[in-house]
Structure formats: C-alpha cells, structure tokens
Amino acid sequence: MTLSPHDQQPTTSTVQLLIEETGNRAALRKLLEDHYEIRATQSIGKADLYLVDDHTFPEYHTALQKRVDRSDPVFCPVVLIRRADRNPHVTLPDLHERDPPYLVDDIVDAPIDRALLVRRLNSLLVRREQSKDLLHYISQLEASNQSLEQFAYAASHDLQEPLRMVSSYLQLIEQRYGDTFDEDGEEFLEFAIDGADRMRSMIDALLEYSRIDTEGDPLTPTELDGVLADVRQDLRMMIDEHEASIEAGSLPRVQGDADQLRQLFQNLLSNAIEYSGEERPEITITVEKNEEESEWKLSVHDEGIGIDPDDQERIFEVFQRLHSHEERSGTGIGLALCKRIVERHDGRIWVESELDEGATFSFTLPAVTDSS
Image (cartoon, rainbow, N blue to C red; front, side, top):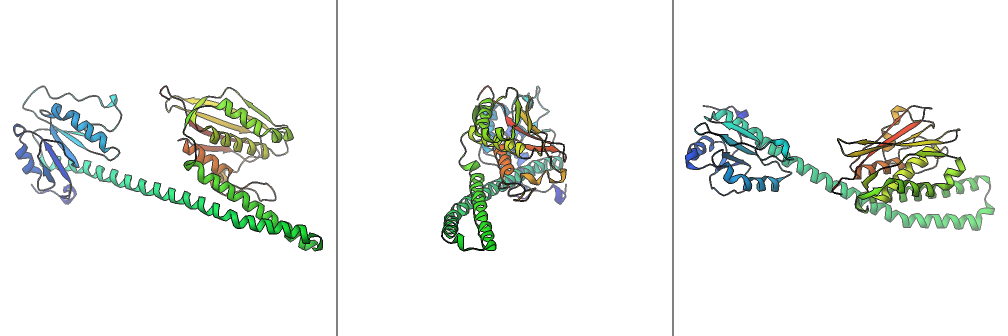
C-alpha cells in the first residue's frame, strides 16, 4: 500500500513499541519502520510516541503515567492498540476523573489498517511538535519580556541622575536670575521646570510599572475590606476636597498582593473622583462571585464624564492620555499600571462607558480556595 505524502512522517520521530512478541511486536515494527525510528526495548525510554497494547498496558501504566506527567507541558502521546483476540479488553479510567495530561490519547482496534494507523500517529506527532514549538515561543516571549522590563528599569533608573541635574540647575537659574527675566523669559523657565517635573513623574511611573512582576510580593489570602480602608485613608484629602461619596458593601477575600491591590483601587478611585465633571463624585463598588472560574468580579462605577467607546481599549496602554496636560494632570500610566497588576493576578480588566454617562471599571481577581 502506498501512502500519500500527507500521511508520511519524517523518520526523525521515534515510536516505542511496548508490546510483547505475543502481541505481534515484530509485525508492528515492520509495519511502521519505514515511517518512524522504532524502538522495541521493554523499558520506557525517551520517545516521541508510545504504542502499547491492552495485554501489556496494566504493566506499563504507572511508568507511562510518570513519563507523560514529566513531559508536561510538552505533549507526549500514548496510543493503545485494543486487540480482538481476548476479552475483556482493558477498561480505561474516565478522562473526567483527572486533569490533563491524559494517559491514553488514542485507541486503535485490531486488526490494524496501516494507512489509518500511520495517519492517526502522524496527527498526534504533529500535535507534539506544535506543543514543543509553542513552548519554545512562550520561552522566547518570556525572555523578551524580561529583557524589556530590565531595559525599562535600567533606562528609567539611569535617566534619573541627568534629570536631577537639569532640575537642580533650573532651580538655581530661577533663584539667582529669575528677577532679571522679562515676561517671556519667566514663561520659558516655567515651561522648562514643568517639563522636568513631568519627566520625573513619568520616569517614576515607568519604574513602578517595570517592577510589577519583578518586585511584587507573593500572592496570599488578602482581605479587600482592609485594602479599601487603607486606600480611603490615603485619598482622604482628595475625598474631602471633592466631597466624594464612595459606597461599598462587604468585599471578599482574594488571592493577591496587598500592596499592588491597594495601588489598583487607589488609581481607579482617584480617577473616578478626578473625572467626575462638575457634579459631586458618587462612586459605587460592587462585587460578584463566579463560582465556575473561582474568581471575584469587582466593579467601580462612577457618574462622571465617561469615556468614548473608541478610546476604551487604548486607555490601558502606557502613556495614553485622553486629555492634555493643561486639562488634566497625571502621567498617563495609571490605568496601564492597573492592567499590569490585574494580569499579574491572572485576572482581566475592562471598562464600560459612554460619554457623559459615567464609567464602570470591572476586573477579576482569584478567589481564595480551601487549599490556600
């Protein structure tokens, strides 16, 4: 029988036959050796795919399980040949009784159709290669992200010293020669000082952003009621100045970094107060449990100026601002910082809003499990 190129697998793939001679090991080897590198030793080695029959499966079950678990997250396929010459056939455990990786990925009934067997083995081997490629890309991405974080930290850290020098000399110029400037000169100096101050704030914010993953505390059971109480205290002057109302029921216990969660709530609440428009800020915090995902959804709702739907994605990007510096203060990194914090907690953050109709910022955090 001639196989099409689609059904052929490069000989670099290794298949180990965990089958005794009574299971026609020699016949299977001859059947497959044109397509794969075949190993027939009876101790489990390092192969790309394992072929076992239902007669010998119980003998290899434990060793195969260890091999598959050790290979995770790289897919390590096991195929069972179910023979028709003896009953009863082996009973496989319910796949729903354990989490992936599963032990047996395919079952082939004897008598064997070679073309069908090769096609099914090839499909599993392709999945294996894809899982290896995916793991490689993930490793590359993690290394790239780490390099970017290190660059952001180093660049921001190294920029602080020349910026301090610029700020110091600008202050000296203002102190010693400020009285000799005309109106234009005073305005130019004011612009320069303001620019240096804003650059310092942006560098500090960028440093904070780059440290979210590298310098965060471990995620531990955290009472959000305590986190919110600390944030209320930190924002006391801003709350009193705007006569803001912040309503919140009992908040849950989550798996999180208390300091980062405090920063998250502080950024969202200060934004809600700042963008309240002409009205007295009225802010409501609600909570909802998602039992299926074992997570909490928290929402911060305000009655402020709202956000255009076209801008609702980019506001979570670094240094993206919807208003000029003259209109609103800030670095343009606050919501990007919120997103980074939530993602570090394996959560999601999004906004629902319309112009002049307020905004609701929602995010998810992992619930505390019994084993936490």
